[in-house]
Length: 97
Image (cartoon, rainbow, N blue to C red; front, side, top):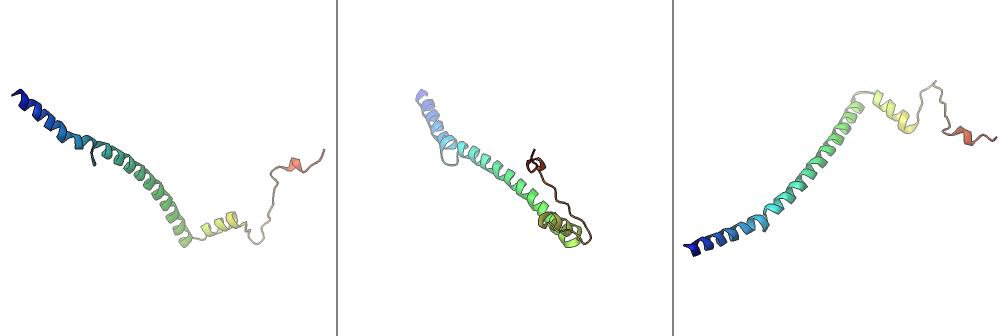
């Protein structure tokens, strides 16, 4: 009876080994879970960027305010009749004492 118990215990250990340490075992599952969580976070960030881009596209298609704003900020354009003032960031460096 003792030999049967020992042999069944060893058989159980042999069956359990691939579950814990083999291919597709517990360590692989934990590693894949970490990779999956990282991918989910990256996907959420990309979805937020895509939503922002979609909103900008809708604004560009529906209204001229977005076009005017981007022309002013990106291209430095001004309206007819407006006066443009350019200021220096560090005017004290140009003045001599």
